[in-house]
Image 1 (cartoon, one colour):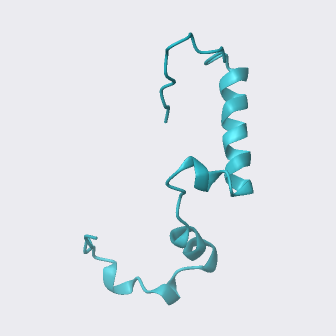
Image 2 (spheres, helix red, strand yellow; image 1 turned 60 degrees about the vertical axis):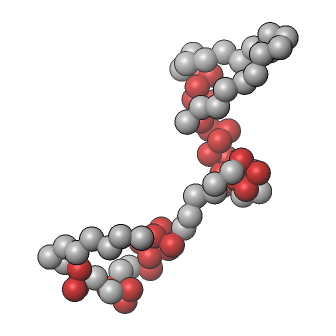
Length: 74
């Protein structure tokens, strides 16, 4: 991990960060779908994203043609 020095680096200590932001900094995103589906908040977020895609007509779910593989999305 590379640490970038800034003019404020000396002032930034764990004690100087508010608890809410400290919790945010400590949180990590899941690295796999298997991990994400075990967390209710991530399941809610994924469902909201799917609903938004459908409501905005960004995509339409259809069955895959025979012999084709699904691709991922970000």
